[in-house]
Length: 391
Ligand SMILES: Cc1cc2nc3c(=O)[nH]c(=O)nc-3n(C[C@H](O)[C@H](O)[C@H](O)COP(=O)(O)OP(=O)(O)OC[C@H]3O[C@@H](n4cnc5c(N)ncnc54)[C@H](O)[C@@H]3O)c2cc1C
Image 1: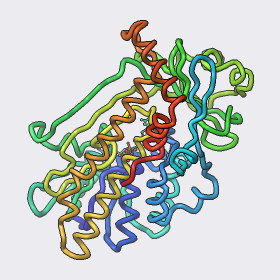
Image 2 (image 1 turned 90 degrees about the vertical axis):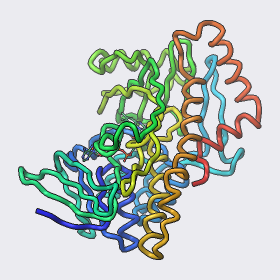
Image 3 (image 1 turned 30 degrees about the vertical axis):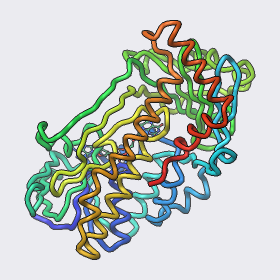
Image 4 (image 1 turned 30 degrees about the horizontal axis):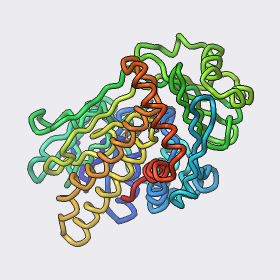
């Protein structure tokens, strides 16, 4: 069966949903094709820190009400080194803050808004295949409930994450890929216990990095650096809490509230950029084109900035017939992506234990951290990037 829409969006993660909503607000119809169920997408525990630009975009999409009610405004972070904590005060340094609000909640709000106006999302769409995008009549074919479908469209937005089909549909020779895979991962635990602190604590420790984060005043998210080959099953709750406590300063260790994990997962750490982000009438956005290690809390925020540039380009195309925004999309998005890649790589290098860097590498890392917490200029550079560079 053949259907038609203006923009076919592949993937119902934050990038696809936000793009869909911004386009609907501008009167541009779109269909989202998602290979999983709604419940599966909502069950993925991922990012939690939103830059002000991302918050603004969610507001622009008309989906910010619950976020402003339940999200936590953070005016700084703490860095723990040599067993002592030092605060980086974003408000004082750059006059900005970030919002802690889980990716699952962002996704739920966007999905609910979409369902509320009856905009179409095809969940469990299998074998999604984009084609014809190098011409004027792109098509996305897929299987749903065993039947074959074709969706004709003006443009395809590939918002289908790192393992999605969109980037893989492009001939390899048309893509340039830049990649760094780190030799460790993050073991993450979600638990219904009060957070250790009202702000995030980033820990540099001889046993490895740790991060104390949260999703709400009663739900905490903790991470410890682990070997890339580790499996969550190797880490019963007691072992996790004991290892986390060993990496914290004594005061934090004593205050840490523990409890049964609600979710446990291991995320590999990778820096990855594929460019360009446009191939004829196919545009890549979010993790489909780039991945950052989560240390700088940039993944979801980069998906949002891509969507901002892409939505602007598409809206100008339909409103005024100007393709200047679409033509500039890849260069504009990549310019910001590379700055966030640099920041995420730098935060990762600064805070993790690298087994091959030796005693010299460890001393350099500590010297840089001490410079950072002792220099207003250095702390300002961290704060400026953490709260998010302008779109
Ligand atoms: C375990 C983990 C932890 C993370 N933690 C953080 C964090 O703490 N901070 C941070 O900023 N970022 C974090 N990230 C990154 C952040 O979650 C992503 O950057 C963000 O989800 C990107 O959104 P997206 O919409 O581009 O991609 P995704 O969220 O990956 O969404 C892509 C969607 O496309 C769908 N899809 C894929 N293939 C197909 C197909 N063939 N057909 C149809 N649909 C398809 C997928 O099911 C998915 O719903 C984490 C990522 C992971 C994996």
